[in-house]
Each structure stands twice: as structure tokens, then as C-alpha cells.
Image (cartoon, rainbow, N blue to C red; front, side, top):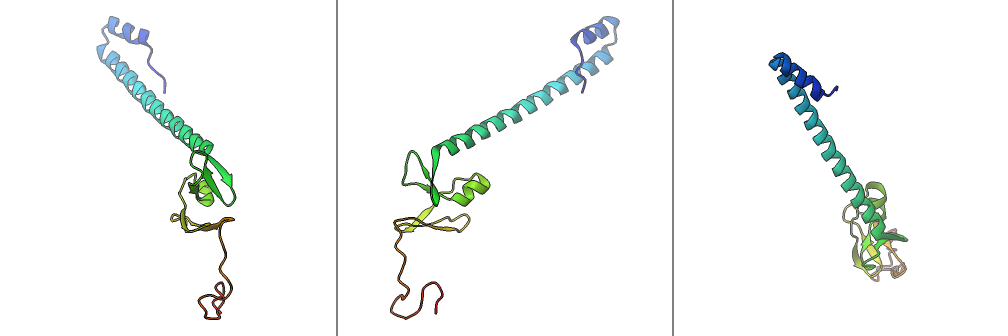
Length: 130
């Protein structure tokens, strides 16, 4: 879009071509609005990128999840963060056993004690159910 020149508008007014000058002024206003909208969109993009970088800088990888640098007890889902850049807090269901309520993935760390093969005295294996 060609932006009307200020001198061209002044020249039109001096010639008495006020309708043409008003049209150029309207074109100028439209261009200004487009620039404002583009500027706002770019500012939003910059803000989102800064927030994402701040989030990324605030987490560190502790296999099998991300942990907050500020609060190491806060654990975040690796899958949600890597796939969608979402910091979804994990819920600790028992010591060392974590679940993401967003993607439903489970995580265990070195604090987790795996149950024995025979559970509740049934003679059945917990993983197979037989």
C-alpha cells in the first residue's frame, strides 16, 4: 500500500481539490491504523517470546521431568513442555510417583519404590494382573 505524501495533500488543497485531498487523508489514516495494528501484534509476539524464554530459563531438566530453579520441589511435565511449551505442574501421587493431569502421563524418579510382584496377597502380578 502506497502511503500518501504530506506534500501531495497540501498541493491538492492549494489547487482546491479538497475531495481528492480528503481521500488522501483517509488513505493516510488507514495506513496509520494498519501500522498501529501491526505494531500491537509485534509487541504481543515479543511479549509472548519473552515470557516463553523466561519460563524456559526458570526450569531445568531433571530426568524424567523439569524442575523449577526457584522451587526445586515443583516438578513439570516433560511431554507438555517439550511438545506444547506448557509448564504443567505434576501431581505427586505417592513419593516419587508423579502424574500430569493434562496429558495423563506418569513419571517416577529415584524416590519411587516399585510395588512387589505379588500385591495384596492375591498372588497376582501388579503389572499383568495374572
